[in-house]
Length: 502
Image 1 (cartoon, rainbow, N blue to C red):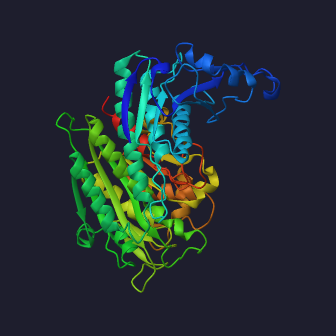
Image 2 (image 1 turned 60 degrees about the vertical axis):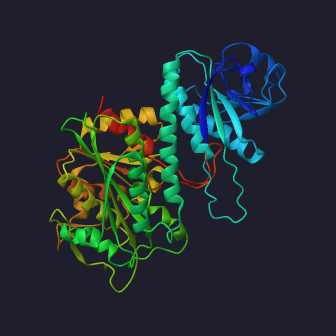
Image 3 (image 1 turned 120 degrees about the vertical axis):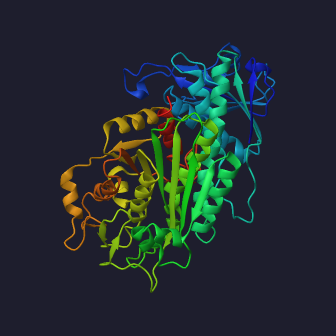
């Protein structure tokens, strides 16, 4: 999708579809059904208000979140159509969703070009609004139907972002960043979308290498010999059940302007297909286990964005990629694996494999000099039970580091809920034969005991753990995003990194 900035009055914009945002400004002092809507258009000038007066006065359009109404041949406009899109609230997050909804409205109607007016509103920063608008448009343009023989490419070819000319520098910067982050999020989604017979650990390493070459990052991809050399017994224990070789992917961003510290370590779970191993999963829904590498894909996508945004901080991205398969060589319940850190792990359930590869990934990041860590993984069904598919889980051992993360959420608009890490939970993963077990041994607090397990390998390094099992895959299409991979948490990880360069 080509993206350009257009300045001028909306009535002079030539376009197949001109998109304008609106919201209900009525004070909700009474029940909604008794409150008369007061629709406010987020534009300057009166032209759009005059052209849409009839539809707005009819009451047919309430300007709810992602609600749409289309006008053909609007009087006095060069645009062929005007699409009004509602915002639930006037926030960057709602702008992002509304822009995605506009793109997804246009795609099946064979409209390949559209123009979206930057919302004009007091309290809405033009940089944040423009960036969110562009991000949302890119997110809305992605579809997962890659392998359909009857696939009809409905991609938007041209997006024009229309500015009224105010604060041009902020708008220019917002557009640039929106494109960078939108493309990075969609790149992540494209990786996650690939089937397991295509996206093997080797291919994931190749995709990371190709991206790094394109954007000027250093990339090294190691195989089984390196895992054995580093004594990554936890990682190797997972991968040895598969005929596909593992891939330890290491991406490095080291700008000359970066200070010696901090060094940020991004560690992602890259299980390209997860059968559960010997503790095999139920057949129902197993086809979605191609998405078990979403945490690793997010780290690759974030590194792509970081390479272009160029924050003055050193970053090391590590993806531990493997398949988790049952075979005569596979790890068994009751086995004991020795992690890179030297800690011994009793295997209770081979389907708790993500934390094993992350354990060695976190240790390796520390060995490479990381002073702060963040990991992301589709780690536990327990987190989905706790938070559903709205919020992802977050954990941390350091308040200052988590403050950077919570500040990043205010920019990214992604939704995480912090869960506790209290010492009592560690009791559940104590083993009688080894230093720890790889599960808590019961269904209670499963997301927390998984995080407690990882905390043992972060040790005293400031660390954040993201359990994205419930949000990495969108189960049903929404007005602003297709069913399939979401690309969460690329935006937040990128902002977390940037926060250390400010």
